[in-house]
Amino acid sequence: MRYWLMKSEPCEFSIDDFSAHTNQTIAWEGVRNYQSRNFMRNQMATGDQVFFYHSCCKDPGIMGIAVVSKAAYPDATQFNRDNKYFDPKATVNNPRWFNVEITLVKRTRPIPIKELRQHNELSRMRVLQTGNRLSITPVDPTEWQFILAIL
Image (cartoon, rainbow, N blue to C red; front, side, top):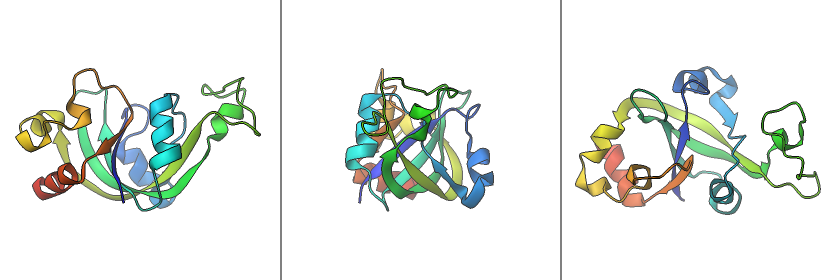
């Protein structure tokens, strides 16, 4: 099993939206960064654990825990000409973009990035590194356990 942090801008999709979504399950579609795509396509597996993180907002931070509930498959938005994530180079026989599905396990107390930065044990966590803009990052198992302990 692996551990991940997946960022979402709350103005686009928040923990409240996630909680209200059918079966509390969503396709993590619209990712158009190759490294994040590769994480989903090549490394994420059903049962992997996920921190759901609000980004690009007043108080960014971890808002909940989810689980990968469906392994990677082609992101349908790449084929839809009316979708902002349409990719004219993608074909059904040669898709360029993939998504996984995640299911909300539980909301947590918000753990702001400021609080995460206060813990030396998390100093190497990718989301805390300067310049990190990836929407999906791996989380080390020791970091995962530490964060669970401070929840």
